[in-house]
Image 1: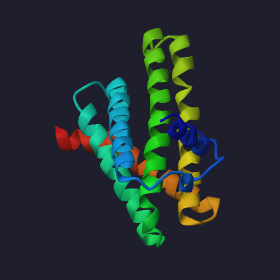
Image 2 (image 1 turned 180 degrees about the vertical axis):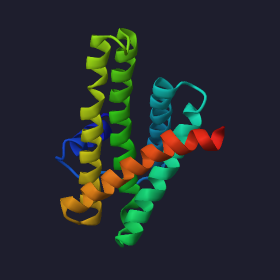
Image 3 (image 1 turned 135 degrees about the vertical axis):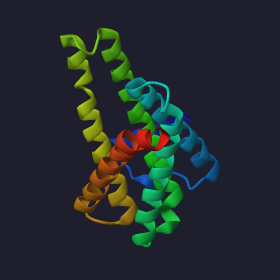
Image 4 (image 1 turned 30 degrees about the vertical axis):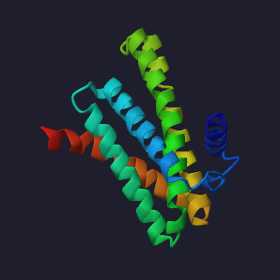
Length: 172
């Protein structure tokens, strides 16, 4: 397990690509569960409990579809398990870091100066997440970085719209 986290950390730092991960269905299933749980935790901290679990599952499904579609269009479907493992694994690490920042901001009071300062640490985490996704896409599709940035940015914008705007309307 430590070696897996080490490889995921290397991917997050652009030292390795998703090809460094094994193509393992059971490992992918565990990573998907961790991703959905960390997404639900983050949603619970940001929006409260009513839609947190549903948000985690919607995030997982959306992420799976987007990256399956990218690899299918890019004629690299054989890389799906490794790519999703990289996305789910690095996403889990970054969402747990984000959850810690949100929890600290809440503890300090989001309206106070210290809380606002801590809450502003979320922006670098989001930008780092986009950069990591761009790196994963670039490596998985054998494309230039600009393609990875375009896919990653589109994914984040569409995913945010789906989770923050459409999900509450569909559920309520």
